[in-house]
Length: 84
Image (cartoon, rainbow, N blue to C red; front, side, top):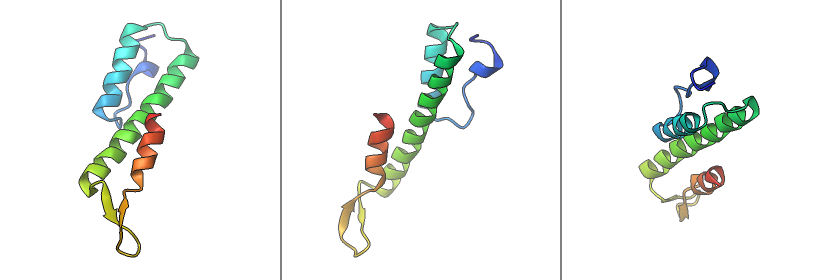
């Protein structure tokens, strides 16, 4: 199944998600469909977390709140949840 069309990394994924996907598929070339589906979901989350982390890196960890006060970037909690 490793060489089948459904076991290809998605082009929109982050490099880390693509690498993770490829490493797992190469190590387990006969993944069952249910496990392959779960791997796709996990790599979707990993890629989204990587994109959010990039945004945090651009904006910095502390940003201005609605009243101009310093607050933690709202995506910090989201990244933590996605990686969990």
